[in-house]
Length: 192
Length: 395
Image (cartoon, rainbow over all chains, first blue to last red; front, top):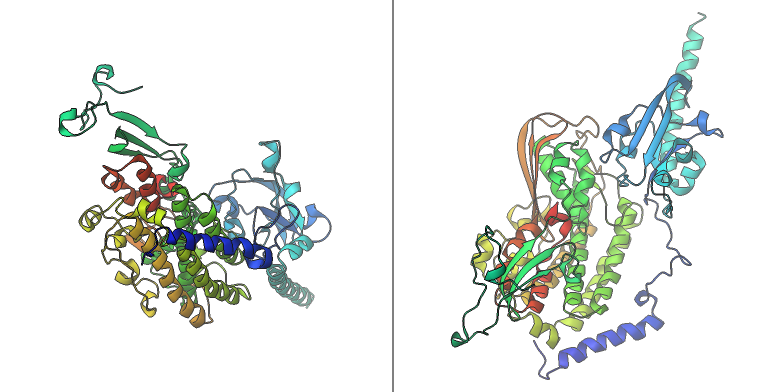
């Protein structure tokens, strides 16, 4: 298989290099470098960086979906979530009284973006963000995300993961409708 | 400092070589042997890896691999976290091939818990595993050439193609390298719309790139003189040292777990197992190029035939997963060789014992046998052809 001319293989290889070099001026699939940060690739729907907490409505403290059930804290493989339960109960999106987290911290220097907290959350309260330019000069406080930094609106969630958010909204809407119907039925049954 | 018998301290372990080589009368140079430490910050060692070399002039008399710089207690962490919690850690073993690591671990747990992934999940697993094999082999060849002094060109061409596959991974799993995609009894999420078409396009364009790549390298005289007859590994030694993967097949042993175990649905695809003849570095390079062609033969029908349906076994539980007590070993043909996970369950949420059989760690054990008598510059090439990833060697 080797060429009869000594050095013929090298010349063949150089022809290939030349084809790639010249091709990079005329063909787009040979020039693939993206000039970050001036140019950016489009964001993928499934992309993930670090978790955030979803809230409904305008007030992040009232609308927080998290009920401090501590499941994500327990399941997190590198244990980067720290939660303290509040002592008072507040009504959640379906009007049911639920606990709220008093403290909810995620240490993003420990988090490995594995998404397990999102998968195990039964309340669709924690989701993955797509923000990736998070460098900071303060390596302790700057990387520890507190509840107020983590809370982001449902509109934001819909913006970054449209398909996934639509599915969650539909599911939560169905649950709320079911709960409303049940409450109505209970209210109707009471005076009788 | 040169090591001479005079400055050796008392109580040092005995050496199986003479520090003063034989005299000029029997053909060797009359000088002293030189002990050098190559690495751990050496560009050719593929991570934090060190080799203690004893040299007679330029020739290697003894080689001792030293590793463990990247040890992070993977197995003990596995025993102290839930079964699911170990899944993202398996991504970080061989960080080039997170999807095949996921599969091997999922296979072990599925054997333990008696779960059966549905048809569609099996197809997705085969597709992602073969795409992983493509991008692992192509970047390995790029790195090998980089080690030989082909600065940039082959590696950049390889990375250009690898990036297309990583983009597919990102749109499917959300991460380019740390995919964390497989689950016990299936996969985490279904294919996004249009993914199959994009994957088909990548797979259809890949042979053209391979043709180019082979034209660039296969007949290159410098590559041939640097690799042919270098680092020969006999099939007998390879089998005795339990070498697996492309390294074993380059020595002419027909052993591919995809054919032997037919795990998943590999029995439905027809592909050949490329074998080498001499077991030298060139054969290892060629076996990997040919394996990529065979992977494409698996990918094309798999992307065509993938059925609709669920992607997770309905019996699988995400939270509160406690398999009954017992033991299981799951192994697959990872791009680097046999990757196995051995698990013992005592019925609790954590495995009682969690053991990884990493291919590149075991393939590294015969480095000395391949390097003896070769030049230092050849050691770099031989090490490059073993295809090690320190995340997996050190665990």
